[in-house]
Length: 390
Image (tube, rainbow, N blue to C red):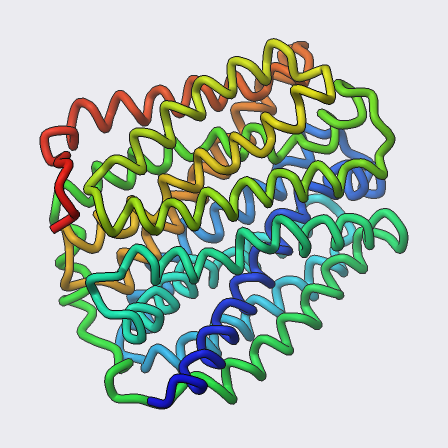
């Protein structure tokens, strides 16, 4: 396949992940807007965030397995189409119940999209650069936190939160067209047997890694889900500063993702251990001194960078443990990250509902990430090596 065609296909794939990331993270940036419009408090509003996360968690394995025999190009098109429908429905919801259902529908395609996308990227890059391939797929999502989510949040503040979802749905339609035009119809991207994919789930190492990811990555969402209240109620800044805070977080996530691709291709578990350990240290600083803007913004960058550095390692290790199911492993990785989404938002909401300041919501993430690091030490640390990942 000519290199320019590969580039267009990868750009189409990245545009799709950019759309998905924009809608997912913008939901957290506009949480105060839809909470006020729907007449609910912030802890109740997090149900929509949790609903999206459960859509990813349930949809990742179910959609991947149901569509196992589909060519990865066909699968990507179906998933992007369903995602557009879910976001249009989100814009029309009249109460928190319907909104949560719409967010659930929007979340269902995400895991399978990134799983199929990882297979497409690895097809272009080769198995020995799987970490770089997956980090490229994730780049669309992390860049969304720099530009897409802040812009969508600003749009919601200016024109109403419903227009945020209509705008991302329109961009998703463009991504669908790009995927249709530029992703090749290749036999190399054909699907496989459901039984073949399912066999990957018989491996204990895979489940251990899923648990480590679900617990550990949750600290991102214990911070990000409450970034609006943190900016306005804790740091005492104008709501117009929220998009800036989202952008700072996104720059950190993008930097960490790129570094994580290198770490994943050259070391077995170093990216995960370093990412988790650094995050724990930053969360302590954020919860202690985060009411000061000069501490708050660097901590946002650092949490995003440290956590994202771990994610390509998780993907590469899962695929290494179960090479017969690469699409399912990519989907299960995203499912684990969205369990983390639900856990982080839930943990932070518990802290706030208990009467504590929103500044302490990151401590819920600290507990969960520490638990993830403990599970890693108890189950997978024996597999760690300092030579390049086999």
